[in-house]
Length: 96
Picture 1: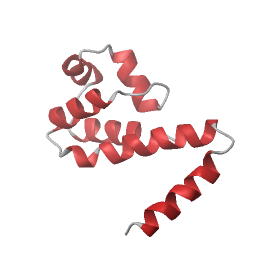
Picture 2 (picture 1 turned 90 degrees about the vertical axis):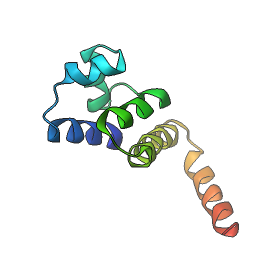
Picture 3 (picture 1 turned 120 degrees about the vertical axis):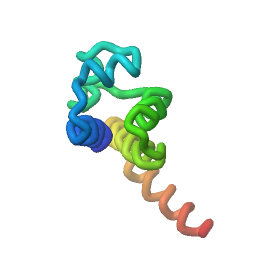
Picture 4 (picture 1 turned 60 degrees about the vertical axis):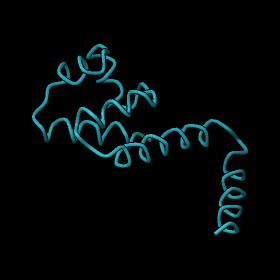
């Protein structure tokens, strides 16, 4: 999954920004940011916050995408993760 990276690229391109401009603000190299957009590297929470700041967005627009990608990485790498996810969904449902 790479919903976060796709969104970052979409926002960056919609604002006609170059990779190097965004990377400079994040204090990372352009290769790293490119790999984040492609889903080959993962941004840190701090980088997500900085991206929201740079793009003048509410953090709530990026954080859920970033978290969902992290959750999907866990689910894909852990054999019992899907069962755990079902249990978690039931717990969340019962707390509403």
